[in-house]
Length: 351
Ligand SMILES: [Zn+2]
Ligand SMILES: [Zn+2]
Image 1: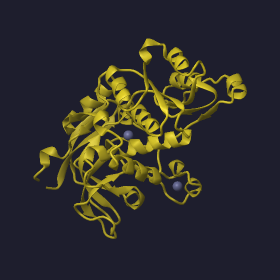
Image 2 (image 1 turned 135 degrees about the vertical axis):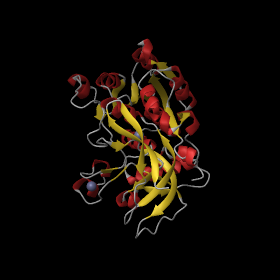
Image 3 (image 1 turned 30 degrees about the horizontal axis):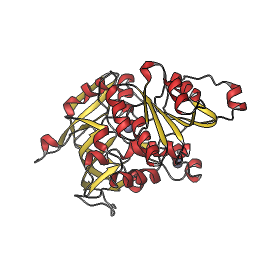
């Protein structure tokens, strides 16, 4: 068998299931037979838009969150062997540029991205093998392990925001990222108010540790957060929506002297308005956090292995490869879907 099935992004709303050659494995590379891939909010965005300037240029095999078993190793690979259970990040920094040398690997001038999770096999490039391919503990399932990449992004956001025990933190947005951030803030001992939409997601936010859950559709988030904080606003706010209006709302929810992380990436070319009086006289700290680093990928796997991130609350559907286009379409609607696990390997289990 030398061919595989894969979901290929061709353009906006155009993902096709195709029969492709199994990718070869070169020096330093590792080929993985994928056991679980996860749908992601970024994929849903890219599906609507048709491309992502940094991450994926079509036509290309779609998807970037996966875990599986090493199927072949290239020459020179000594740290992995056929049969190892692994997870890979969707990128790796160069380790040499201005940013990498200053411990800002997420801003690497030459970040190498990897796509191709919605397929039976993927070849992991040597650079990712070198710093962002990790062996799984035996007890960790493939689908839970595949949460490693989004969880590492969320760790970056929560670390940069310096969330501390006892603080009142608002997490704005109840998609997969907002839910993971909610969990991480709760694990740090903060009291979390989750502000979002859709019943299933808000229920998940409560189950993941939010003390207060506010349905944003009711339009009373500001009043609810004020009441929860004795009229002050939140100590820290982490915005996980990625729309300019949500960024402005996040700033409005932050108390005097508070910190607001504008964590969700907005459409290119958009801007927001900030009240200069609030920024100056109320000493607001506004910041952004992007992506992850090898240290955070390892930290994310550690948390998943420790069992403190309940994957079953976040991955609430199982689909086949053929159902990927429909699932991506569904994510943009008001469905209850949070993340779907794509069972890529299932129909070829004995091949
Ligand atoms: Zn993702
Ligand atoms: Zn670099």
